[in-house]
Length: 389
Ligand SMILES: C[S@@+](CC[C@H](N)C(=O)[O-])C[C@H]1O[C@@H](n2cnc3c(N)ncnc32)[C@H](O)[C@@H]1O
Image (tube, rainbow, N blue to C red; front, side, top):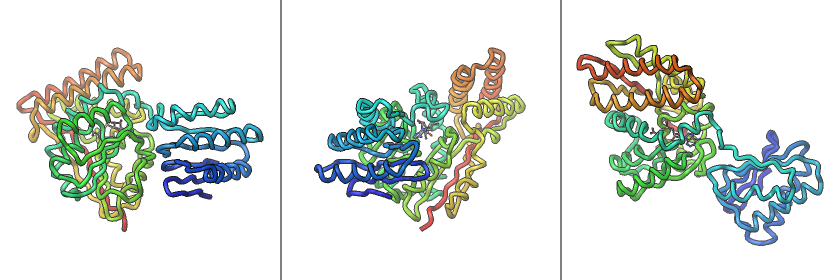
């Protein structure tokens, strides 16, 4: 049972007893306001237990819209037969600011912001301190990845989206190298998006836009992009399939979804090979404890195939000491060392002994990189698929 007008839709999901608000709720007059109120009141009267009002995808609401919601809450208070739960989004400033006021109408209304602490490593990954690590990675990865992107179908003039784009390096490099028709970068971290916008001004790129958003509930129309990327991000989320579903939704039929993920099982080296292997096995286990799957590169093919993407292409991107500047490679491992030993180590409250031995493992890896005869790699899996027509 849906209520749709030109700029918005309210849809009712009986399984969750939830009304999803989507679009821009700009009520024009009292008649429209009463129509929406009546729709909500009808649902109210059919439900028992708890009714959820979900505002994750409502971009905007006008004053008449808020008044209509107050009227509906007053109606629910008067009946007093249901619990009402309101779900707001941290990426929509209006919803955090205005929706809690509905509790003044009825203090039994529950209010939550679904994307505060919505994955375990959120505070760490959305911290500005994380940005230098991302930039160091991009410096050594981009020279190899840009050719892989061509093989996966990225071409000039396309409408491109990078979901979980971090600080914006890669979308802006794509703008420089591929001249897309339009580039949209979306990330949940406020700091990263601000960083990306400043970088865009420095790069003097006009055909790009950076937005704050949640990859599991994108405020982007269906079927709107030719090429959608999600790089080095599916692994940090406990439900990557929810993100993949959204990536596919916003891709045009015939367009491609491109994913790139870490796989710590693929990192090897010589000399000090066993210290290196052991370090990344341990780092992966600590990653598991933080809700991150740092070995999921090998799972991408199955994920894309299960999501019914077609013409799947897979590549290993092997950054190694023979194709990459050793100093630049070492800076990445130094960033990982700090992140793993201290940021994650402190967060998991690892013992001093565990932190010291992890530190020693990263130092072994760094010695291999610095040795002129040493060989080591950082291998990622790139996997893309076509959305069926
Ligand atoms: C490891 S970083 C990778 C960033 C970038 N793609 C890169 O390769 O440099 C993961 C990014 O995903 C973002 N992120 C995590 N969960 C998200 C979500 N639900 N919606 C949007 N962005 C999210 C984080 O803020 C972070 O910037």
